[in-house]
Amino acid sequence: MPRTATVHTADHGPVTLTCPPWCRTDHTQQDGNHRADLVHEGADVPFVYAGHRLLTAALRAWPFDETAARRPVLAVDLSDGWHTCESPAQVRDLANKLLAHCGVLWSLADELAAVQDGTNRSM
Image (cartoon, rainbow, N blue to C red):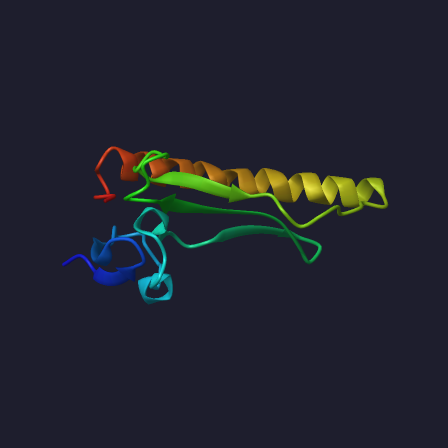
């Protein structure tokens, strides 16, 4: 049975959400938001190199947003500032880890495709 959550929005009162199977959001933390800002969030999948988070990817969906597609998307956060590689070996190490992480991104692309075409009951 799908998980549901009721959120008390600032503009539409109580709104009941039916969460897709991949949603990890604690919707009680969204009380007081506008309905369009309610979001389903999948698990964060970070890429960390030398202790620095270089990117994080996760499924996201805003089921009531009028300006964005309501179907799930893959959100990618590319923030952690600059990281320096001080030797060719460090550059190669970074490149190898990026290549390995590409496999993770391909898996997320497959999950997104399944969610968007309904084989994973996205919304």
